[in-house]
Image (cartoon, rainbow, N blue to C red; front, side):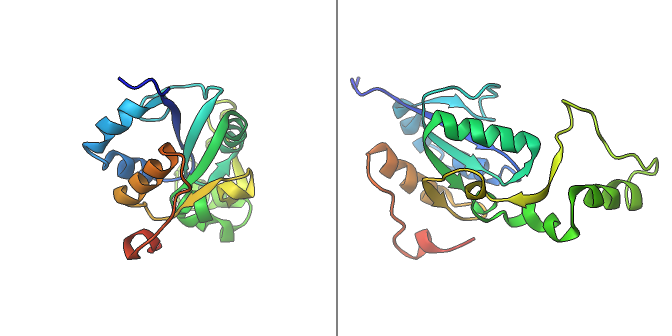
Length: 184
């Protein structure tokens, strides 16, 4: 047993499809090796409700699309030593930001729920239950400082593993070779 303390790892899911978390799970057997080196202190995988203090490494999937995402990302940045934008939505806004050309959030909700959706014409709004959409979806770095960017939709498991191995070894991650540099 190693005397090296485990790294406190968090994964966060904001405005996205969870594909990046699925790629993380595609690490398969290496997840066992990873578990020996980290404590997963926050993640939708572990269903932990409160983001803790003292996180060493946070992997953030998804764009900032609501007031809830805005609050969460500020908490994550404040309580994490390293923050990685994981996947194209976190890096660029990607699919989540496709609603931006439709205009402010109210217009988007009007089109979806009233004009083309719910026959009752009701826009869901329950304070404290339904997050308030921001008028513009933005990538993580538009709101808080990001230490590393890992693009891909989703980034493939080998790319995630290369990033994690470098960070766990105290090295700066590098993207080398065609498989590591390919976007999307």
